[in-house]
Structure formats: C-alpha cells, structure tokens
Figure 1 (cartoon, protein in one colour):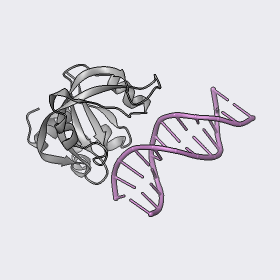
Figure 2: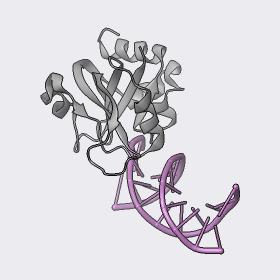
Figure 3: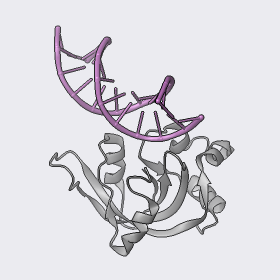
Figure 4: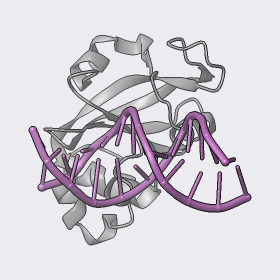
Length: 139
DNA sequence: GCCAACGTTGGC
DNA sequence: GCCAACGTTGGC
C-alpha cells in the first residue's frame, strides 16, 4: 500500500467537510498541477493519505483512504485533469504541525518540508509511521 | 499583506 | 526550444 498527503485550505475544504461526507467520500477536485495529478493517477483503492490544513493551521489533521481511482475532474471540461475520491478514516488524536515536521530529522526529506507548493504528495513508509506516532494513531 | 518559490504560458 | 512574463501557492 502506498501513502500520500492531501493539502487543503480549510476555508475551502476542511477536515470537518471531509468527515461530513462520510463513507461516500468526495472528489479531490480542482487540482491543476501535473505533478499532483500524476500522483493521483498512481493511487490504488485503499491507499492511505494524510489530510493537511494549509495556511493558518499548517498541520496534518486526519487520515483518509482512496475510495475511487483517478477519473475526470467534474469541475472542468479540460480532459487533462483527473482526480481521485477520498474518504475520512479518522482524525489524528493530536495534529502534527509543519513546525514539528521541519524539526524532525527523519522528516527533512518530506515533500511537505521540501516542496511546500505541491498539493498532492507521496509519503514514504517511514514518514507515515513517524507522523502517525506523533499524531497518536495506529499506522 | 508580503514575498519567495515554483509552474505555466506564450512570444520569438 | 528557450526564456521572460505572469499567476498561484503557501509560509511567514
């Protein structure tokens, strides 16, 4: 299983919004960046991801699961853009902030730390375990 | 609110 | 195919 990280501005689409969608999940639409789209095309059903709040909060707040493979983004006619659907699995017991990730030596290579502008990112196995441990949830 | 980093676009 | 201009993201 692969691991990912989804960034969202909480004003636009928050963890609470995602939880409210329940098991039906929601399209991760609106992505207009090739790297982010390519990452979504690589996702498999059941892959896990972190849900990250950007801007004011800057913290990983929850765990999600990919529940639909990449398909055309319903918010555009442009055939270049695909997206997956994700559903909320559980919140972190404690949000893991960007500051913490930056301070952790084993997270220095994380895309979240190194490539702040990529909105859909891969997460390595070890990064996944570290953040789960910091957040107080099972990996 | 500002600015740096980065990606995309379009002229040549 | 290069590169300047521009737009967007997101941290501070």
